[in-house]
Image (cartoon, rainbow, N blue to C red; front, side, top):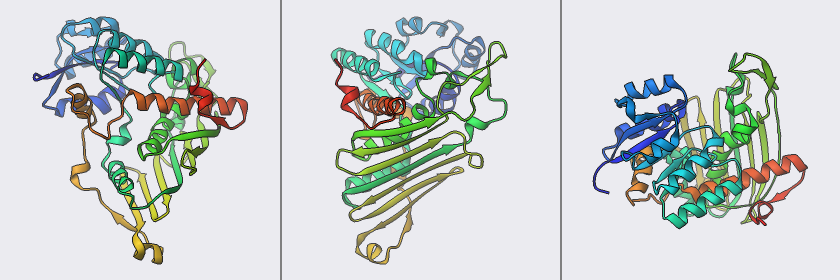
Length: 359
């Protein structure tokens, strides 16, 4: 495809405007030509922000997908819309980008994957941490075997977003629209990071809970129950035998945003910390560091900085980055989420084949 890729965005909320749109605007290879949303105010925003004619703004995603001025589709809707919107785009033969988690459950994800493969439709999943330079640099260090075979992975991802004053019962707090809470929202990223670093999950034991149990409904103002998790802890066994723990919360009272990823390998240790918009990588590797048990800070080269939206456009144009996440990655992540949900429900260790070996 030599001309610019014409992108249609389904769902013009904070994710689309905050995480996707700026990348498209920076790209020389694409243009946003259509937007779909059920909210008229957001459609009016799209007209202004994307400089779109009003007839390129839709309330029904099927109309956007069917339009002859869209080549590729970016799905930024609440989770329960992902499956049907993606399936419609695949039927139309148009490449898709999907926010995470890709679907409400593994069965839906597998169906999408099989349909995309049969139709030879390119796919992309927005596991945004894969496109951050510090994580990509860590990936390269692991791939070069500089810290050796991994023995342990410890991850913490905690925020205070569930405690924001007067936050209402939006779709993220409703199981029928989100599938899960912080487990799918933040946990999907952390699960994918483990896989991004070359590991696969064998099974999980998980627990979760709801801290803020009721919120005000957006439509009626009435108080109603929250049905998705505010915190989740996963103890996992990886296929290489390594132990992994992932702790996730959106109700940390004193921390607005913290991610810690610490890996212990045969030949060293590497730790990434993201705290209040500051990124740090500490490493202990090589005989001198190992003997002295010392750590030093390293900085990713500029070459590890990429544009997530550009990576999707590259997939559309047949130039897939080896670090890019596709629908297959999204489906494998969903199998771990489903296993964690089943573990919480049954209070037992759940092996991944219990999810993936469908009847």
